[in-house]
Image (cartoon, rainbow, N blue to C red):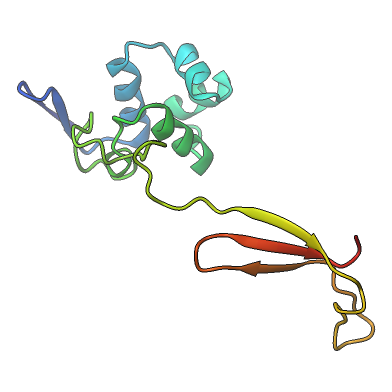
Length: 145
């Protein structure tokens, strides 16, 4: 049995015992889209939406990430587990670029000579060395360049 409870003040939908396909249908209906326009909006093939809504397939991580990044009101916990509210009035479900405080990794690539990148095993050659720093950045060393 499925229960829908509408909070008239915040226009939240509290939904119990829904499958993820039913929650995706709720999202599509909330934004007044059809399956094709929903697929186009989040950047996935139209056939994947059809397969998800019919229950043939489960959504991939890539699909989930595209959905919550396109629609920030979708609470990720609600989408995955059916617990919580939709739409998310707290705005904490999907970080946007203006709110995201996580440092983005930077990338620098340097070449080093093969004389400094020798393996202790003479039958093996070092292909790449990656150094990760605590600030989220890293450097990649390619001895063959």
